[in-house]
Amino acid sequence: MHIGFVGASGLMGHGMARNLLAKGHTLSLTVHRDRVRVQDLLDAGAHLAAHPAELAQRCDVVFVCVTGSPQVEDVVLGAQGLLSAVGSPGDAARSDGAAPLMVVDCSTAEPDSTARLRARCASVGVTLVDAPLSRTPIEAEAGRLNVMVGALDADFQRLQPLLACVAENIFHVGGPGTGHTIKLLNNFIAQAICTATAEAFAVGQRSGLDLRRLVDLISVGPVNNGLFQMMAKTLDGDLDALKFELDNARKDVRYYTHLAENLGIPSVVGEAVHQSLSLASALGYGKKRVPSLVEAQEQLTGATIVPR
Image (tube, rainbow, N blue to C red; front, side, top):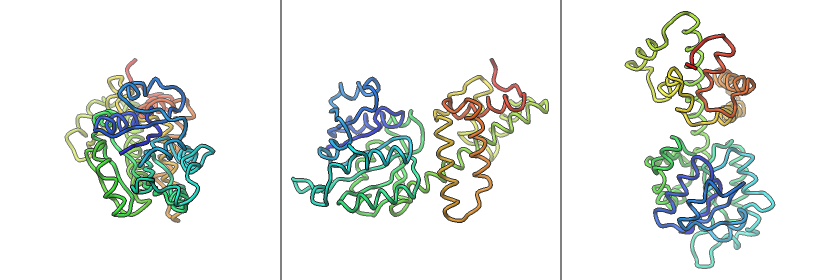
């Protein structure tokens, strides 16, 4: 297939684009600021497109892997967005008789925004599928991501061979919209673990506890998990074990609390996690990785956790 990619310079998008290209697909991509992060893709045969509209004209499927809903909306609906090149359902059809354009949103986005975009795309014959990601940039480069897909069965069957190029585990979690919903649940639980760990480290250290004994205990019990172990590496001065920007985590949990609010469901823990992340961001750690929640706790409590 001829694949378009918006967001190939990102930590997750780069690996996805590289694996699609390596598996024999023709790849066209846009560049947000400069081409340094995608130069290896261009050297390997990827084509440069001036804007998303050009991808819509060239490609069978366009992947979008950007920060969040405002960016996705701009890619799809902007002045030079994907739909600006598609004026009617007939325009979305391929001259060779192939299936109409499919847009695959791999971003972490708000389900309400996704629903509006999906309806707008459908009105001109374009299919929008939500297929957000989990795991890290390391797995992205290795083609071993987890992908959660919200789509009709026929759309999932069309998309699955492409996702197999970038993912180890592909979950068809339900109909349109369920991919973004389940991703928000996943990220809420993840950030609840991270924020709870950072707070526990501060309380433990201030109480006089050797935090390594806490890590030893949890490491052999039912509380243990990969996220806890990444946060535990802060005790060795490693603040980059979890390669996820704190401000992005804050945004994702805000999307989760919006989802709960729109459903009329109290989100007591979700709001607490969001405020913990917001506080860390206000203290200046937003552009650092999520493990810097520990640094924020040090600043708030006077604890000494990260060796310096």
